[in-house]
Amino acid sequence: MRFSLKRSLRWTAARLSRDGETICRLWAELYGQLAIEEAALLFRLARGKSRIVEIGSYRGKSTIMIATSAGPGSHVWAIDPHIEFAGNGVAGYSDEDQRVLEAALVANNVADRVTHWPISSRAAFARWQAALPVPDLDMVFIDGDHNYAEVLFDLMSWAPHVARGGTIACHDYTHCAGVEQAWSEVIAAHPKLWAPGASARSLIAATRL
Ligand SMILES: C[S@@+](CC[C@H](N)C(=O)[O-])C[C@H]1O[C@@H](n2cnc3c(N)ncnc32)[C@H](O)[C@@H]1O
Image (cartoon, rainbow, N blue to C red; front, side, top):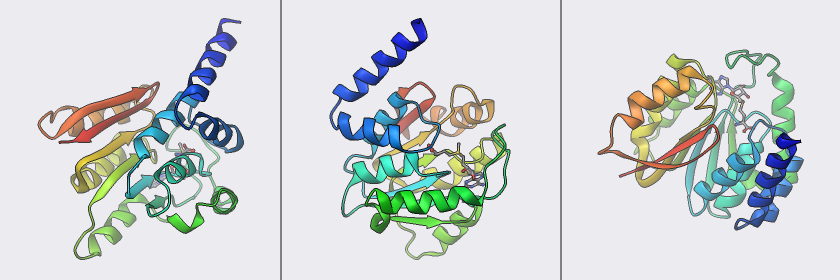
């Protein structure tokens, strides 16, 4: 009973926020693991951003939240190899997710502003660096392999490319030790570079100073 009251309060808060109807509709329609208040925060963080990298797109819930909020003229590079994977303690990711992602991008009218790179974030970073000049980013959202070494790689590699005023965010911060440790070392330990941003449940964000 208490659980469903909490859920309904969270839902109501999300619905009453700016763009609440869109957020709630997308949240209800799309597959993924974001809680409603995390989805609402992600939507808010992406507002007004132009160049965005997402690591770990799965079936597109976070990708479409971000791309819808960022709007026309923005671009999201959605990085996910969609291979059989159990690195987050959840088995069952596979290439079927890629088919669902591609269809959801089209169905939600964001396919023109999302480029899916079906490769790992390590391979994607090598590709990104090969571009000259290497483009700055307005937002990086990390929700891929949650093992410490991989999150550390993601933060150390992508964070320096976030432009001043831009946002970096990680999901599963509160219940994946690797995410929490890497975030503490690369972001929280550098208050002259990163101002703590908003957080919602297991989503944490910071702004580049
Ligand atoms: C927790 S899911 C992402 C959920 C998604 N962000 C959402 O909100 O719906 C994690 C995803 O990370 C992907 N992944 C695993 N290892 C990866 C890597 N090295 N680089 C990029 N993505 C990876 C998996 O294929 C899986 O789809």
